[in-house]
Image (cartoon, rainbow, N blue to C red; front, top):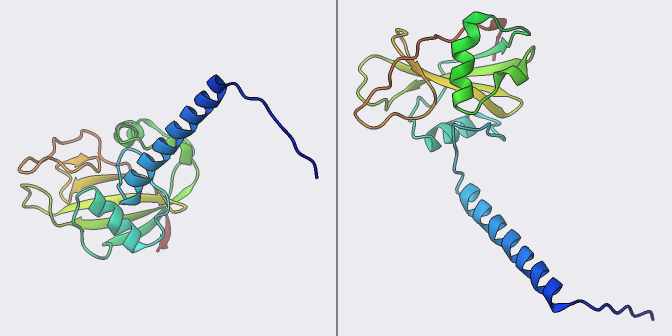
Length: 177
């Protein structure tokens, strides 16, 4: 039998213990935050595999939508963005989404009817962009095109200010999902 011994100064042992305690507290805080399936529109969210996951994500943002999407399409994000994309890319960027990372990639766009948009009488739709089970973008817009904004729910009784740039038409692949 071989026995190893080590001599540790109390100062180093105390520092290592403190560091381990801080890491454990940070891990616990993260687990409590994400364990309740807290979601945010300011970052890409992974593990969105099916309609139930999409509905849970949107519900976490405060949206009530139709149980099934109105449309599900596959789109091709262009390799080069022209000036018509500037406003739309800014809208996505303001939410924490970076569509430039998906140049030349095929994404799926799921469009839902919003049923709880505050103070709105005309139909409102929500479009969610998904790439490989990850939310990579989205927007809220009126059916008439009178407004467009990010996925954040506006305060109750207040409709969002119109966004100047409508979403550009990405190149549909002709496939319906």
